[in-house]
Image (cartoon, rainbow, N blue to C red; front, side):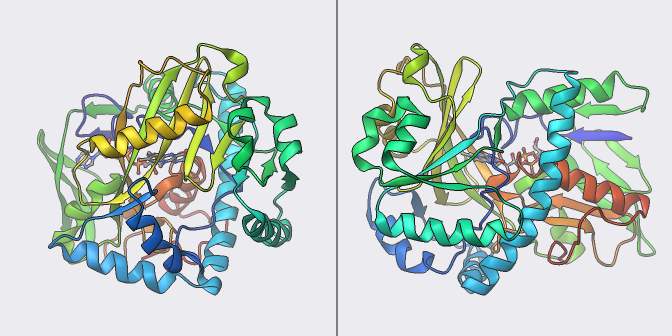
Length: 391
Ligand SMILES: Cc1cc2nc3c(=O)[nH]c(=O)nc-3n(C[C@H](O)[C@H](O)[C@H](O)COP(=O)(O)OP(=O)(O)OC[C@H]3O[C@@H](n4cnc5c(N)ncnc54)[C@H](O)[C@@H]3O)c2cc1C
């Protein structure tokens, strides 16, 4: 088996410095019934969680149309149920990896608290928690005081918290360390995995309806099975095969701060649902992530967006970290309009498989997605029902 990546090291794409939350029970898609009404407010607010810059790019417009079509209760519910199955498979497999302790990735069974700003949000959360309970999620709606008792570091923002949803069974970890650990484990195993890093794939080679290999910056590599797991890079590679993948980049920002006062930084993973900012404790660092900008393929920093994120995080946990050491980063979430990733066989070409489009949940869904695709390659039954995950 050969692993190809354009970057000189693994985990240098969107997996490099994401939010660090293994958020198995919070998989409801961004495309939800109430979202269309909220989008204009978010876009008009200079500090809002979303940005949209229209581009002369049919990919952006078709993605937007698909997204708007998915913004209804029935689709959102169906997607949530499908994603929960994948997420719970992922949870079992990720915990197996963590338990083997072959490498460290700052894994912590930290639990997660989603902060809700007002009574309406608490009511909405109650409905979602009741719905997800039918599908196996164990979550509890808490009042403000209970949130504070659970995570005393929230004292600074208690005034804008009406309640929260607590999920004990959520984890946190460093996705880059996870990628590096998996790669090192594979490289040293007897599975004969050859890592060719710094190698760009330029074309999928097909003949008579079968994949034959790939053309790369380092020459042709023959293969009888090819898995395309290129995040936002997949669309360009697969376009010559006559298909426009419904995957578009949604840019986000993160900060990674050294924790300077243990009791002032959250231990539990926190999601501030009003600001749409997430916090995860990664060992002695605090990871902060947010922003959802539909602005094309550039990973450039927009200084205003970055300073908004810094201001929001600093207001939430002022004493937690050294705010001069931000380690800012941007990444492109590979998002599909519905929020469902594309997993399994590529139609019309035997031996070609997809594993992409996990959007804002790629770390969470990684192990489950890999298990699904491995079963498809080997012709085994899928470990979970796969309706909705195809093209
Ligand atoms: C701000 C932010 C916060 C996030 N927070 C979380 C979170 O808390 N929890 C969570 O689960 N997820 C989170 N995510 C989402 C998660 O990071 C992504 O879903 C995940 O990293 C995508 O992984 P991937 O392997 O598909 O893509 P990538 O990690 O981008 O990997 C794709 C790889 O393909 C390579 N590549 C591309 N094109 C080619 C080519 N032609 N030839 C060779 N190589 C190529 C790239 O170099 C790259 O290494 C977040 C994302 C962002 C941006």
